[in-house]
Length: 181
Image (cartoon, rainbow, N blue to C red; front, side, top):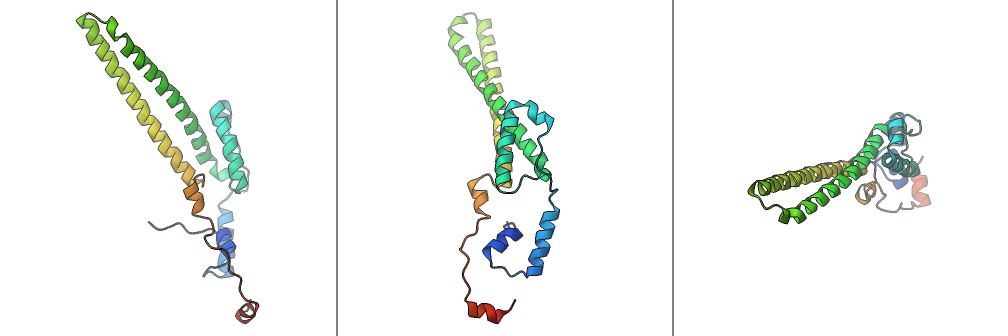
């Protein structure tokens, strides 16, 4: 899979590119046209959810520090915040189900009758299935959150892809004069 192309800002920072100044200026203009120019706003649905609100504020602050807090990204950022909240709820639900499962296992000795014993195993299987389904849901949410984090350079690997790999080399004054403007 091909690596995504670098932004005009990164190419300008590197100082080396086969593109002309006009091409870089056009590219930068095109990149800016994809942004709305409006600051990222928090919708009311996110404000109502305490965990999502906390994550939104933190994410907006981080995106602002790298100049990516544009309203154009609001849908993805809001999904990231709501999924983070859902994951927290899911993990709490998993813990409750696991506690209920342990409580049921501890009460096993109370079931003497065959009918009660069959009921015990039926409940045990139901609880184990519920825990498994919740853990699968949690894994899916974590995977989706990871995709968002990669997209918005929130991981070490994704942010490392846009970092300049080599320091700019200083050209000699004579070579600059010979090459022209």
